[in-house]
Image (cartoon, rainbow, N blue to C red):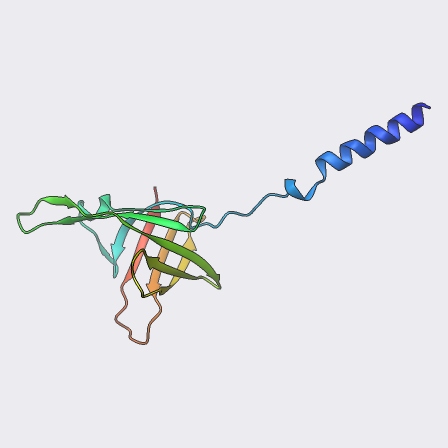
Length: 135
């Protein structure tokens, strides 16, 4: 009788601890808050460094931008919201809410996924290369 009880307990442990729902879900490395460090290899000013891009798990993003105005003051810009999608092979699609254009961007992760380098995929070589660090 003890053997039957042990087999039953062992079976219950396997059923509860080995279910597919317990598999770790790999989270996209883009999820999190990012700050701009450089644009086209030039360091950004202290105002632009305040810019934050928050990529959410649900495929949305929020960009809170800062720019220096004509009076040399740092102004917070209107929030930009949109959607992102990992297309695979280091390609992400980015679309601002209300926009019709979907940007295809190469995003390369480095520094243990704490730095990203972005470049828009286009027919022209005029794309900005932007480096961001995880906040």
